[in-house]
Length: 219
Image 1 (cartoon, rainbow, N blue to C red):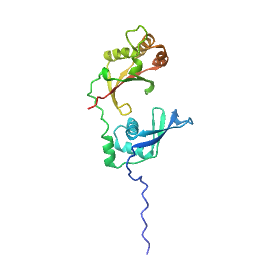
Image 2: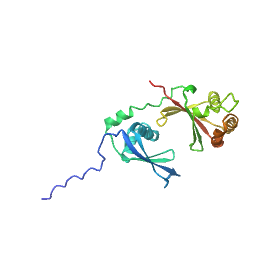
Image 3: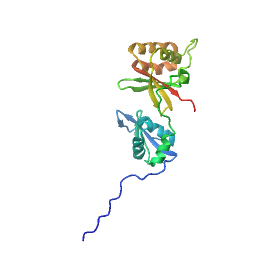
């Protein structure tokens, strides 16, 4: 009589509670390949790591679970890795509920914006991340700042709602730049931005989009 075969052990990663602090390794990527540049090690709070993952996946539980379990994700030219973990369905749902959903009905409020992201190329790639506090600095004897110039452009041109950024914890509004708009912004930068900022703004010559970052007010 043939002995019954024992079932093979499951290869699935068992569910485990999500840690509140996660040691993360960050490495720069070059053309899609991880480089041999020094690895940066830092501790992420759970919400910060989830925000980074959601920036790649959106609120799709299966994709979020897969990345948390694999312990690996690439985002904005960096590769992040950690010891993988897998929360159960109920815990993952509770974690995702901490984060807002996109809301295309939200009107653009320039006074709420805290940064402008300059993108270029096709598909668009990040060129500059510029905070309002920096762009709002005025050149000596100038009555306007480069931030003022960006808001004037935003008031005159159609903005498209571009979703909710879990990285920035903000709603995004995208402005497409024609060649004429790009050239006009470059002129404004030379005229209005302080000297140290003008060096950074040279990348405007390659800009195709400006994305305004507007954090939501607390409920």
